Length: 519
Ligand code: BES
Ligand code: ZN
Image (tube, rainbow, N blue to C red; front, side, top):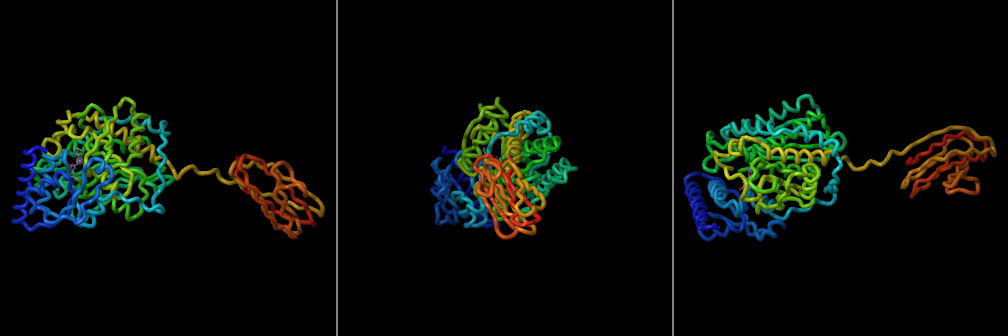
């Protein structure tokens, strides 16, 4: 960290501290990385009103990056000043995450807890087998549509989480998605109300045809910020951060609807509110899913997709994300977008909404536009415009295609391979004393069983055999009670036959019901 950066950071903090002295302001908990924290401690210890007794062991990825997290209580005004200074000058050194209480802070920055074995769904299959569905959809996707959504969203003066403009931008997105989904009774668009600020998140749900309780989440944040001011009219177009992510997702939606695609699992597309002020919208939503034990089988975050600042095309960020799902995403890119180059990097801190899902115990990925530090230099300023991404959305189109492949490959899986249904056949008849009758062969599948049930009047005995028609002395199962109520079951490890013999021990009428797994 250069001295100039430290100086600006401290200046920001002191400005925050004096602002706090003048205004009544709430205390909030934030978590910061080592680098920022060390400087804060050295030069402005009074700015940190309290540090959690626990200096927290950071999640695994962060430990690997040699960083620890410190949970501190600061004044809300100080937090905004810290935010500005950190964003402007310390982007490589660490951001911060907002928490409403100490307990929530500890939970959020501690290593993500495994969901209980009973509640945790099995890993989804990451087998890639939907080429015939995905490829025609990829061909329909167009950069110009993505560009138009970016233009529409960035035409709001700002999308800050407390302004009317920010509220209106959320309402606009809800309306846009609702219009696009018109005519589909399986698609609903709702707004998620957060307590504490007026800007709502937007959630589009495509209910799965087959396995609606398993949910695939695509997300991006609909809010924006200008770190030099947050008034109603301050320009914060947020064209790249993150109109681009919302626009990429919107193109996924357009093509899914145009193709009449209906997923077997439920797919949710979420435009989060209040990301720029500490992942607040996504923390609410991810925690709400966790509380309700929602089986979210995978999460993909699209935050900044339209500025190509690095040599590779799509960078998979490896911290606060899930390794196995990241490998799946890399395989999707290799399969469906073979000309693209994949890179890997880290934020070094909980830099976007994927981290909220990771904290809630879900499998999450964050494919990003560039290597860390080579991303769009205009974000969080009035210059984060579509023009500064070259008035085109070719880079964002790559992310839209990857996200569509992800949503369809995960979304097309059902509850697993449904075993072939059992077959039941019934015959009736009558026998005189000493008369026999044979049935079969029934062709039974491997790992299945063959069950014969007899009911009726008189006394008929039941025999079942695999190798051929049974006799009264050669059988795999015999049921020869004093009535016509008899049962036999035989099991199969490999495909095989079942034969039945009925023997009239006395004159009888019978109903024979056989139930078996057919080959
Ligand atoms: N889109 C950024 C995150 C980002 C920026 C990732 C640059 C990689 C490179 C996001 O909207 C953001 O600004 N996040 C904050 C942290 C958040 C917890 C307030 C940040 O990066 O400081
Ligand atoms: Zn962002």
